[in-house]
Amino acid sequence: MREAALLAVSLALNVAGMAWLALAMDVHWAQVRNDVPSHATAWRLRVLGALGMLAALALCLWVDHASMAVLVWVMAVAASALVVALTLTWRPRWLRSVAWVCGKKE
Image 1 (cartoon, helix red, strand yellow):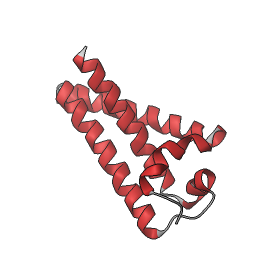
Image 2 (cartoon, rainbow, N blue to C red):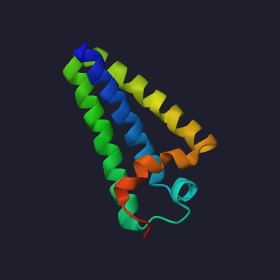
Image 3 (cartoon, helix red, strand yellow):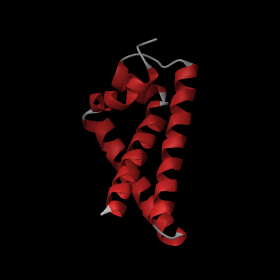
């Protein structure tokens, strides 16, 4: 049961990381916040995205042996990319919940 919870957290971190990486792009940020991100905001989003995905990989490695953990992580990355892409396509405002980390509109 503990492993399943850690893998669920890993999946959530992958989705958040992929969303932060997508929001670092001007086009996607404009879909969500109706403005253009500053260079500092885009940099912060890229760093958060990378850290979120690395933390997800660390959780996968903690739960399972390396070969299985990497496989699970890669599949979670692919699923997360699909979730974020579909969200940006149909309901981009839903990603405001992960854009809050960059504060108010600049």
